[in-house]
Length: 284
Image (cartoon, rainbow, N blue to C red; front, side, top):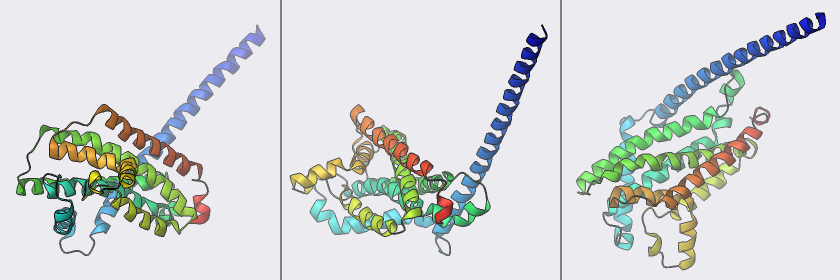
């Protein structure tokens, strides 16, 4: 009887101890999440303000930049690639603002670990917050660029289709895709600083391999067309453009490809980022 009572007491204490540890672990996890969300908000504000610090027009540049780039590209390439694109300024701007999500997320995330060494050394935050802050900053910029797109559509009398609301299904896919690359690049840059210069060149090449100011069939080379169609950004740009400019709903296969790339790159990038997180402090 005494043995059974002791066993029950031990089991009771074990259960009680497990429950207390579980609650304590939950509180600690919730506290860390709360701290990370605060840091995330602060960093997004910081990133956004730093973009146009000292500029007279300030936030207006988020609208003016895509408009001015569109005007330059339209002026230079309209005669060469304008045929078969419909409303060419809208065609260009649709491609530009989607590609810019990827460009901003990846370029800014590239140096986020090394660039925020002071924060990492002084405070205890989840490293994953750093690429996330750049992602949210890029989404804020996209929202202003989308305003620029609406203005251009009004000026050039582009028809508005109800499918414009389906942009909410494209943007998350390209954002997750970009975040995955951002995680991978930020991890890589912590160990190899030269990757910044290599990626800069690669990003320029990537832009020209994406049908932003031309159609995939306008190149004329079968090999080049295959490469362009294999480019992940082509599917995001094309789907977004079809929704906006032609009122076409992307096929199920298109969505499968878009989110396949998105979740695949996100899983790969985050895994690399997480596996190396303990080493960052040694290299920054």
